[in-house]
Each structure stands twice: as structure tokens, then as C-alpha cells.
Image (cartoon, rainbow, N blue to C red; front, top):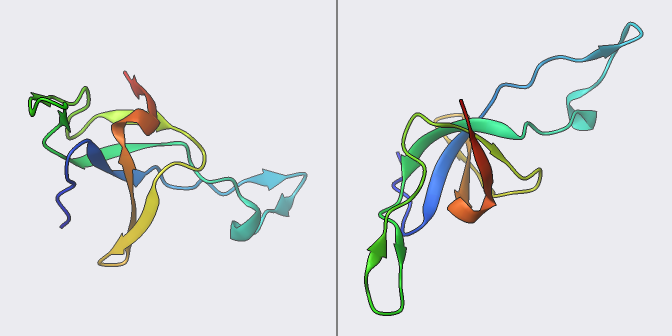
Length: 94
């Protein structure tokens, strides 16, 4: 598994749901990427200029909403994840 550094988090995007419009199945390449997912791992926190660490607002297990083009895609054991900055997360889904 990957342990993110600093203010980075590892997110498992929500599963894509097959979308049918008028009986037409939309191919995977035309589907929009999910914009929500689950936090799998978090970094240690953001480091200030004077060396103090500010804890992250998210924790492992949180369901989050993030930007459409946020993060960097990584594949681990055939499972796709995103590594992104906490700043790319819009909110926690309750």
C-alpha cells in the first residue's frame, strides 16, 4: 500500500454506475469520472514555515467529494486510486 506524504491523501473513487440513456449504454470512455470516494490513507499533515505540523481535516474511512480532475491516478493490485492534496477535497459526505 502507499503511505501519502505531508498533506496528501489516498482516495479510492466510488464505483462507476452503468448509465443508460434511452436504452443506449454509454461506453466507459464517455462516462464521467466519479467525484466522490473514500479516504484510504492520509499523510502526516501540512508543515508550516516554522516546522510545525497542522493535522489534516480528513481521516481514513471518510467519504469525500473532490474536483472532477483532481489528483493523480495510481493502480495498486489492479485497483485504481487517486493521490491528491487535501486542498482538492471539497467536503466530507455525512
